[in-house]
Image (cartoon, rainbow over all chains, first blue to last red; front, side):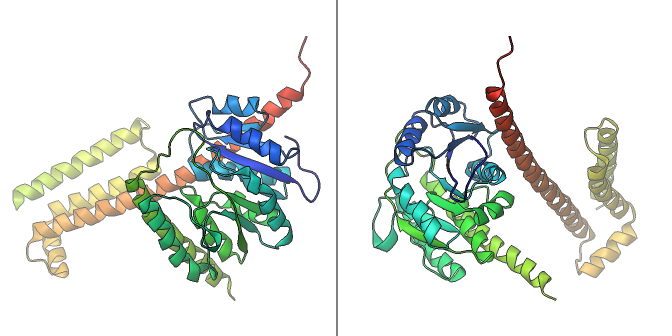
Length: 245
Length: 120
């Protein structure tokens, strides 16, 4: 992967942890949709062949020296992309749940909407997508909590199919939530007066393996994220107050 | 009451000795030993000077001085644990930043290796 050139430089970021069965297909599918765009697989210290499969599929692979979790892996990719000068980064998860057919829509929205973040949404406009009971409940709770904080409705706050501009990349390369990052990242951006919008995207079941998120973990997830949201609100409000003369 | 105070004295002395040995063997850094030594000395003083403990219990409105001692012990160790949580959080942040930097540098090194001509 070379240093980005031009005002339209795009990087596809694929965080992956033990996804050797899916990551190769993800890279091929992305390549079919956006043929000349560099793809970076961030291997979160997998113990299977994720890194080798990603390289064999033609992606650049950055391997973390130890397991950092999703947020740490995504932030590592954002840091590299920012240092290499990329203008846009779109995240596509290595488990294959994000249909790369949505990439052109996300990129077009990033370029034309003036928003710093564009979310590929499963639920935009009231569309449905099968989720577990607890997870579905969590999404509804997050929508309710986030609406007054963000000042606008967000249909799919837990979507990881997200594109960001260089302005957001700069913020995230310095400060990014480490566990369950999607929702907190929205608050981080909002506190800096950045904007986001959603575009409809198709999600699929995982290409291989099974999710490690159980009902119990989903409940922990809800509590953890709610706490993280409020901490972020307090943190940045505090800084703003201190800056006032 | 006196047996409880004697037990507390023994416990605080053991803690002081343990911390000093750990510092000497470099198992614990000096800056982190200060919290534990402070906690142990507080315990030692309160358990040896009964008038001080009774005064403290009176100030706290607790009729039973040993109960005041247990309350102080709990608070002191809570503070020490809180400080350790802050240290662990800072270490985790530093560790994540380091791991990401190592990964980025390895990525650049690999790219350079692939570009470099193969030595004959």
